[in-house]
Image (spheres, rainbow, N blue to C red):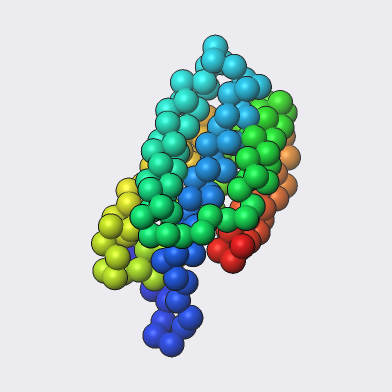
Length: 180
């Protein structure tokens, strides 16, 4: 059972901010996988798995796109940046090597798991539709992380540095998308 991170009296993140940041994150994930595939190509041994993960991320993004419209949530102002930055991150890590691409996936999905868990802890039963979707997506993000680790992510050159930098970048992106 997860430890409760939100305590009575703590400031709660609004569901609008959750939808905004989650839509931005899922969009960024689709761009990371697009960058990886642009470099690795469709014939690389990792291509099938990357395509599968990209399809799941696209389904997640479509859900949050719908929530943005239905709940009248302002998208993040950083959307054009996530487009370029996500693609570049995927392409650069793939250019370093397939294991570096997997290191990128492991880092991003580790941070997203943490982020989604915090949201689930905070939501509780207050928004069943959002909670249920986040739980479903979180499980798939963990599958992506586990696949990346199984594919040799930790064997990538400078793994600890790359992993730490990418996770830090995710934290900054999450904080920015919540507010802007």
